[in-house]
Length: 435
Image (cartoon, rainbow, N blue to C red; front, top):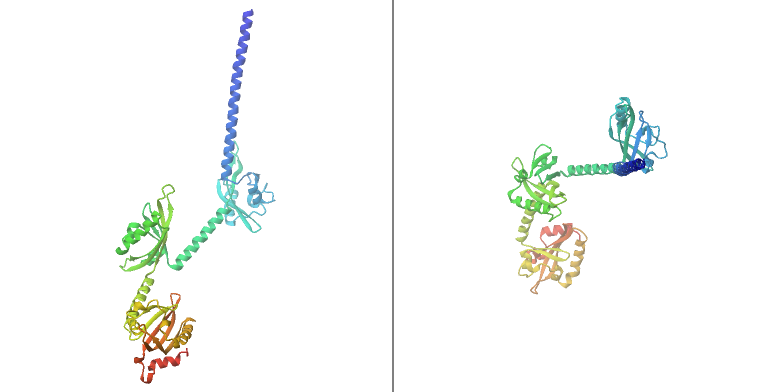
């Protein structure tokens, strides 16, 4: 009897221990599950807070039944109560009419219980407009009955402001390109594909249209003498040796003519890991007219210098009182071994002291602005110390933004009878001021 009681007691204790172990294990699993759920919920809240600024629910009639609250909701709905109203019916909340019509027809009139995204509502306070984008999905009960919508709201004011600023910048760029007849180009350095805006085709004498080509095809129409220089400057930009480049080169048109193009470009995208250039962009501007004008100016300058160099009169060109050019006749008249010897000297040092005040008076008149003075006799001291009388006339003019004076020296031997100036000089003296 005693043994059976003892055995029964042992069985009871053992069973209790087993039950306690099972209970303890279950309790520990529950705590772990609770902790895992808490971590999961916290993770969910963190993730949702990153993807949205506020949350909402509506009933089957699309009336607000719950809002998450917070600064975003307070700023959007103000002091008005949104509960029981549709989001677009809350006082102070504005919706773009066209978007509202589409949204209302789809969700209300057609009773189409479909998800929606980026439906924008806004509010303007103190001149500042805040824009929010909302997205929602339908919710149902266990039997499949439609309960309403649940969704999120995001403040997209800054995004819309940036998009508007970007759009305006693109519009200004397009207007600038159209006004300057420049063509925009964009090169994918990985594939070699090139996009050029409509003005490029117009430059080549083709109908105005977008051009899609390759680097290799463009290289084929660049003048052979310019190709190596263009490639070198582009390579320097890709390597980062220069921030960008601006280079002039010739391009052959489909008609076989050559035009001059000013190409500007820089790297606009690099691989973040290696720094390798991925994209380049810039503009092309036809400058054929400018190159022709520059060549015409050079030709005219050469013709002018040839005429001046062989002129029977001496010619001096000075700026800020310093001789910058002299022809051979001026060097001979002033006793210089060559025109170079006169460079850097001051014309005043050749004027006889008794005539310097008159000379300065005429110089002040010319320096006051573009003008001219008629021929007038001057005693001049040559470099060899001898003195001679010249007829001197000057003219001042602007050249590249600076005032330049050109003086003509005419020997007395070339004067008319009794020391009178030639008829053309007398006529000039009548027309010109006394200075």
